Image (cartoon, rainbow, N blue to C red):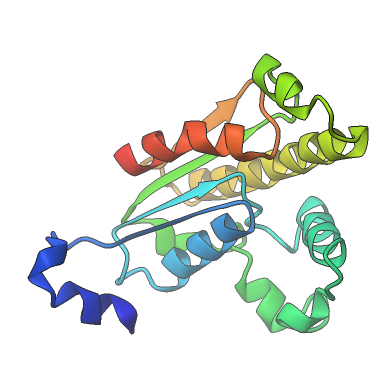
Length: 181
């Protein structure tokens, strides 16, 4: 609803193409929006996201992130395995991503020197959670990448990083390449 209203304003220099992207939980939302509205978006990026909530790792990632903030995953999509859980699993059916620019990235959870310096003074659990989350989204990113390849898609770009945790240091490094793609 918002995009067409904004696009009417010449001051925005709208070029006729729409893109959506997100980081972490927002990456899942962006990929889901683009996949379920293929005619609306021309490009999408997901940085450190989990796109397959029905897989074992994906389910654990959703559960961990939501419950660690006091939420209940069933408040999002109903009971696990419901039609809404399935509908939000882009790896199960990535067909809506076929005709658009897609950029994905994830790291392996191993901290870089910059991240190690950043985490000095934090509790060790904060550092560990960043590594664990990124290792989980790496698995989820591979699932979507493989699903797209299995569907015959080769147009997407995926950056599998040798090191990086789930934090703004890693996210910031991926924003420009994502927009460029």
